[in-house]
Image (tube, rainbow, N blue to C red; front, top):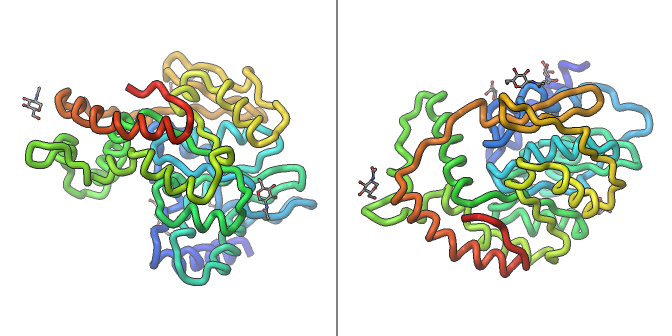
Length: 313
Ligand SMILES: *[C@@H]1O[C@H](CO)[C@@H](O)[C@H](O)[C@H]1NC(C)=O
Ligand SMILES: *[C@@H]1O[C@H](CO)[C@@H](O)[C@H](O)[C@H]1NC(C)=O
Ligand SMILES: *[C@@H]1O[C@H](CO)[C@@H](O)[C@H](O)[C@H]1NC(C)=O
Ligand SMILES: *[C@@H]1O[C@H](CO)[C@@H](O)[C@H](O)[C@H]1NC(C)=O
Ligand SMILES: *[C@@H]1O[C@H](CO)[C@@H](O)[C@H](O)[C@H]1NC(C)=O
């Protein structure tokens, strides 16, 4: 029975995989810069094969972590999972980008959610949604009062982290790689068409979300703050989601060796780690300054849009 369900899931994945970007749900492949040990992350296919605990059901999410890629989305989801009233899922499936048979897609999406009790809320994360042109409209059609979580970090750092992930993925797949400067600069000037830069234009993407959702429905988590001191950021999220304050300081301890926080809950321990210990490249300082000065204007525009500032350089 279990293996039948696994095959069925794979079949469904294959079936839906062709027309739109389906990110492999295997957790080893898509790591955030600030990430958790992939082996300790909950398992979608495993969840689908076990029989549901009595009194639970699958529901479309009450809240979605919409991005940003490399912003610390997995860390945020894992930390929120400490809360007893949260059922967390990392589907990373871009089904909202798919045009055909929306209703069927929705059913399939719900099926990827974990079983949850009526007193729990389900939180899903798909980091690609933030930069997807279709996601805001589709998510709004699914549930216009859904609460959205967006975790952001310094957009220049995000570019480098994005590059680093792609770099190591290409190395693993024996594809040619380039120095970051070759991607950032074309004929002497900043290559603003580089996708990693495009994804860091937070104002451009946010404008698209604000066409469909009021600002109050999108809570922005400061990713840099979350990593250096998780609790205050998580308490803000608890308030935003109307959850009782159940995440406490003893859920975290700092590992000096790693230089990151570890999570302690339900007798389990999970540690943040820098992308499998992958080092970031050192970027030519002239090029980095070019990138930062280009992003600065977009950042200022974003701050006005969200009526809030961040300590990005
Ligand atoms: C997902 O990735 C794993 C490991 O990288 C690979 O073995 C598997 O075939 C992939 N599955 C799909 C559906 O692409
Ligand atoms: C995830 O599911 C696979 C297949 O059912 C299983 O072999 C693996 O141990 C699971 N991983 C975790 C972390 O539970
Ligand atoms: C829509 O989202 C809101 C906010 O999380 C939630 O209260 C409501 O139950 C959701 N509706 C559906 C149909 O899931
Ligand atoms: C801290 O991190 C180191 C290096 O990864 C690890 O060997 C050690 O077990 C960790 N200590 C705790 C208390 O988690
Ligand atoms: C950095 O790049 C600039 C051109 O963009 C070049 O003139 C300079 O020599 C480079 N610096 C180093 C240390 O490589």
